[in-house]
Length: 145
Image 1 (cartoon, rainbow, N blue to C red):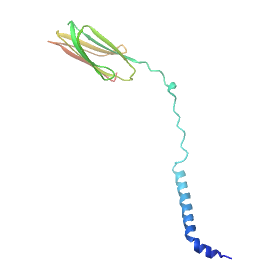
Image 2 (cartoon, rainbow, N blue to C red; image 1 turned 30 degrees about the horizontal axis):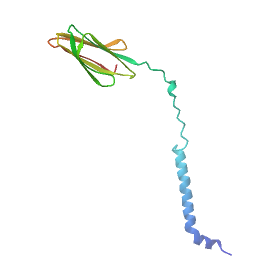
Image 3 (cartoon, helix red, strand yellow; image 1 turned 60 degrees about the vertical axis):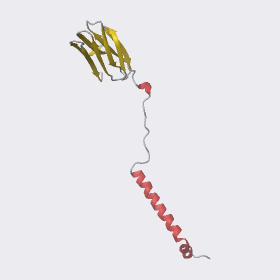
Image 4 (cartoon, one colour; image 1 turned 30 degrees about the vertical axis):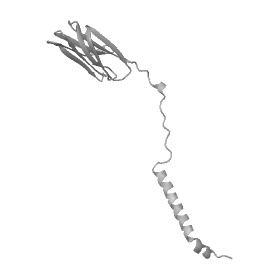
């Protein structure tokens, strides 16, 4: 018959490794549960159909004055520069956009002595200026309108 002490003498290293692994595994399990690693709550997100509809904005550029024509450059809501040469006055351009905030500007120069510009967003005038002088030059600007 094989004695227990003889088995323990032969298998002591294996028993020690199993005991240390068991204690370490239990310790890691307890630390994970203490620091909240397990059991994350489910995140719920509203569907897009729950968002109220957004009405697009209408940006209106206007240039006016007694001169017959003007040079016009404007920055549209998509941040593209638009250039127009020898445009008959008065001039107006309406651009729709679905952006929640727009930054636009308008630059106009005439051969005459007076020129004015105006930018309106959804019908409300946001900026209006006029200048006098030889080859009058004016600009209008709306930031975050």
